[in-house]
Length: 110
Image (cartoon, rainbow, N blue to C red; front, side, top):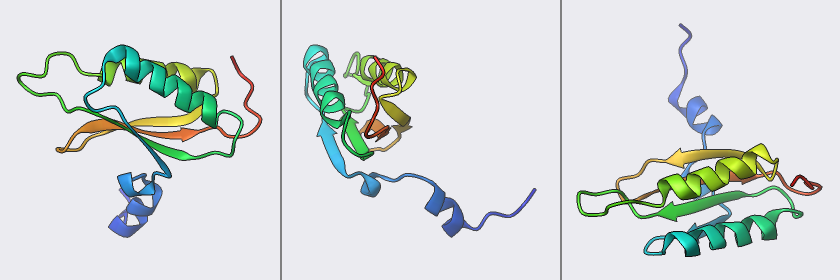
């Protein structure tokens, strides 16, 4: 197995600090979160590609259902349609979320 320098690996991965835009959905209802994600995707659709950070409340013993599944499914659907180039879950003790790379200009998939 080849040796990977930690600095080389870090250069190939996305981090929270890489995000150009942040959508904070902490404390928001499912319906409002889905509407906010849709507005963001519509806004970014025909502009240049961008890296976005979508923040959601962390799961906890008292939290019940989180936004992870509904928002995650919405982002995956957008990726299938070509609106998003990539999406990855964000694991963070302070809260969860997603790192998203939009497809950028010229995307007209529906």
